[in-house]
Picture 1 (cartoon, rainbow, N blue to C red):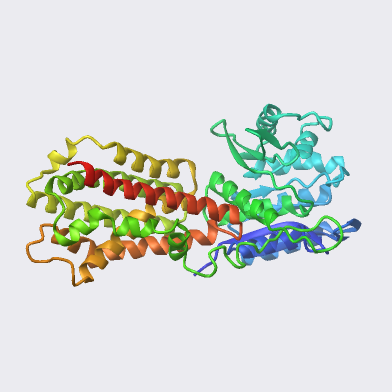
Picture 2 (cartoon, one colour):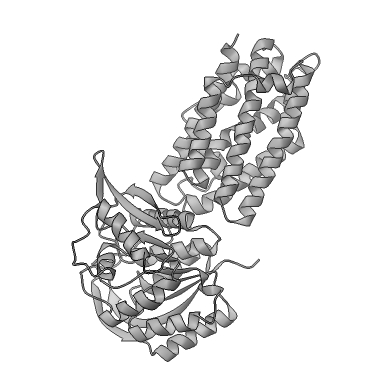
Length: 504
């Protein structure tokens, strides 16, 4: 299988925390093949830079031709470009490789953390005139945005200024401008937050990405890492918004888990936080999610008195009829959620996963209708039934996770339904104490124990594991967020049983 490929065009950091070293570490940890073109070599450590050797522009061109003529790139990021001549060289060479140049992420490395200018004014001018018109996503921090706009330092003072600056910079040509908010932490409801603003030039729209502000001195390489992570997402066929959101989450976790004992100055981020030990301690994500629930919650779901009434055939008929009508209405929204998930991803393999899940849901709904007919309930009877408040609460929770969260949030919100019914179906089918003969609910049990439904459960489990590789890191905060979504969805499943039980 051909891996996604990203190219970094940047300087070398002998300390390993920034530059191409940070870029390649990031790309590797995000499962992207990284190649590199060196523009400069620096002598530096965690205390600072004490020397820069700029590469000849001819050799920069030679490296770039070598990589793109053979390996190619699904996305390109630029970091420190050192001189006006090198910027012009990069733009000229990229003109010969239009496919590779479609997605260029530019980190405008112009000003150091201490405030020193890293590029001469002529180079900045060339970036504005020649590089930004071919840029897909530009990722300036506040001082760099001020520099690009010719404003004095300190002129961007608040979030409204950030919005205006992002739009003004987009006039230079980038399709998207991500103006990073690290220099302007925001306080909302007593919490200090990092607010990054993504401006979409074509849509003339803004999108805020908000995360808790991580107070750490170990921020060396943050900008390099973010742009490399964005390029990695683009290489994996994510759209700009998804790539930016995933990259910011990756950097936030890398800061939260920064390596504090490397050098005596500003230390580096932890680029491998997402491939080290996971917070779910080596278990599968499914097992870890169930284990994260409060004591007895999962058993209260799969062994609910409603389920036991199905198993021994004692459940009241009116309770079951109310439940199966509401369950069909729920499945309609469940299919919508899976379709929403497919829409939100540009990865064709992930889309195929969701397509399979939707087909499984459709098959389940057809069986559901056939079963309802044996009870004298028509499809129109079901569609004429108002959604219960329990159904509305559950389905809107799932759809809200899809609208406001990432792919992991949505899949975890959907998970208790698939996992729980799969476990219930097999458990009741295999239990010798389950009543078979004369049990009006036996066919319901068979439907959820059958191979087709169990295949859909396996599909969901596989999807959860795949998403966890990209959306869950060693960050305890992110893991707890995911566990909270799973807990809320499980509680809503229990309430769904209660709805059926209490309807009579």
